Length: 256
Ligand code: NAD
Ligand code: IMJ
Image 1 (cartoon, rainbow, N blue to C red):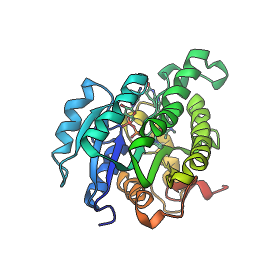
Image 2: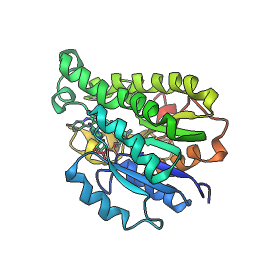
Image 3: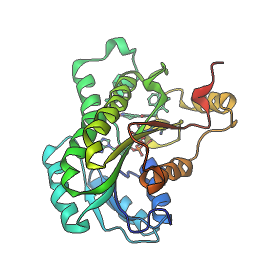
């Protein structure tokens, strides 16, 4: 029971394929008390239904659309009320306008760029700051990133740029929050068939190539990302901050 007695907030679960849900299941299995976030009313019922499957009933299921600053601010009060303090925050959300993932990066429009960076990167900074008053000493923040931040992946485009900024944000936040005992890390997950990935053109080819090239000869499972999030949130990772940990069946180490 690596997370017994820990209260951890996870943003956001959309459905059963969401990486956030895999993380919730792994953390629940290790004894954590969870706060689950959802983006909008469409997801609310789904998340409430999924929550029934957990061993421990969530402390709260809260709305969190990061496009609205007041919703981020409200989380501070809701969490104080429902959880007192929290020991962990998981940021598992991203968005870029679909068209920006369909044309060459060269043609990214200003609004598309700003939306992608605001929702996928600034949200981590905003959530970390808004929740600082409710963090216990020695809390942990984890976010999700992708290898497209470092190497060009077809169609990943402005999301690759956003993930590069996200990973840099992890380092700067780790520096800012280090003296408060708060650790900040990223998990770089291999491709997983979620709503955010499956609609992408050529995604099935990417899964196939990943399988062929990765040292483990397969793609990564949600559970493996969830279990790494458990480790990072646990006291076992007390010396790790500002890092990007790969959970990609080894794909990133290959040169050819
Ligand atoms: P998903 O679609 O299940 O999750 C994305 C989440 O982002 C959803 O819950 C959605 O509601 C939320 N979201 C989008 N816009 C939002 C907003 N304005 N405010 C609040 N929440 C918003 O897909 P996923 O694959 O589980 O994605 C989770 C994270 O994992 C993302 O950061 C993604 O970039 C990252 N990631 C995914 C993969 C993959 O292959 N699926 C690989 C590496 C990293
Ligand atoms: C997304 C786009 C292009 C290539 C991609 C992905 N590859 C992978 C993803 C190779 C693995 C999934 N991923 C890592 C993401 O971070 C996805 C982010 C995303 C997806 C969508 C699709 C629907 C939409 N906007 C999106 N914004 C962000 O409208």
